[in-house]
Length: 440
Image (cartoon, rainbow, N blue to C red; front, side, top):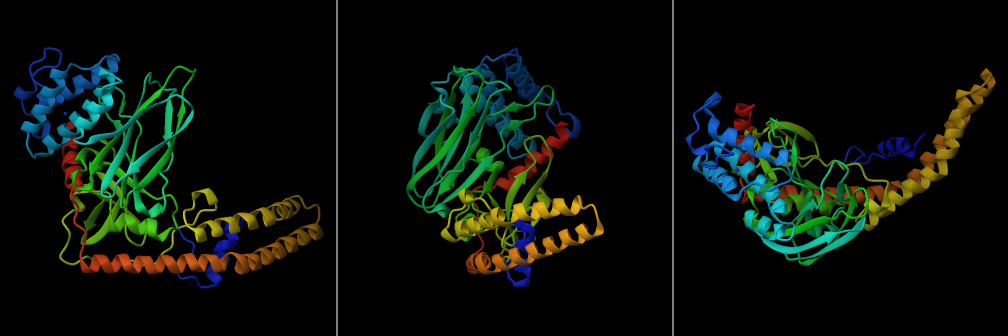
């Protein structure tokens, strides 16, 4: 038996309060006239929707860049639609198309163009030719940094992975990933590229490892790090950004996502604060997943989630410690590392013996041999449980108490004053969702 099964029994027997449960065109003949479209199903402007699809089809048809006047005309038409759901929908797509097109225009000028499109400034750029390469950002407190990548020769065989951003202390940054796939409807999907980032609470160097996969030796990955002040974090990036943690049991890492959130990540459902954890991507629906302060997971449609903080937050948090990792390399505090090492050590100690006894039971030729194997299994369980209670449980208790103290502090802070986001992300998700239902 794997040691984690014993872990649940032992910690439950010890009465741990935390337990070990889960922790965007006009007159260009190629693309038509967006400004004179007639209303279609649900009141949608057929002209601008046809242009959006024509742009996607053109991007699929070749690797050439789109004409600048076509993109600008589309973006202008989207802006002319104002705050309507249709306007939000097409502004989102116009921005994404501009980002994709910037790389196609020029790999050299693309980074600066992307920063301009997103209303930020370029922190750094680079080219990754090795299979693994570290990038380091000298972060400043109050800024958010987004890494956007693009292969010189993209194909189905190219792949990029950006490892978790690391710094000291780990909870001084709030990490996020964002959706990068756009549904084209008429053709296959378009990919913006790998898009990861973080916001910084203190100034410090932050490092991530980029791992690339491509056939041959002549391809290369280009990247740009775009910087924004938190208050100016663009809606395009905030809309589908998903916060994440490296160490699921680092209480301060969890707390930083609530105390100093990624702009737009906190919303309220019936007054209860929730943290968006996954979203139906662009053109894919109107639902999101979220977690509350108890780490309980739920699903809701975007219109149910509001960004305006309530006069009094509905705080129902329970102290529930998430599942702590057994991988020491995924820990960011001394105690969570000790805990992972303890579980790993006991696993190495007892798992081979337990598996051998299980095999003996399974292959027992007689009733006597079966009973003997069952006795060995019971003895191993008792021995492993005693070792866990003596060696791992005290560490787990310290981690649990730290979690409890931190959750109480965060809950109290929201009781005093609920967080108000500078970015109305959930309103935008709701309006985009309303429009995309009509587009289908």
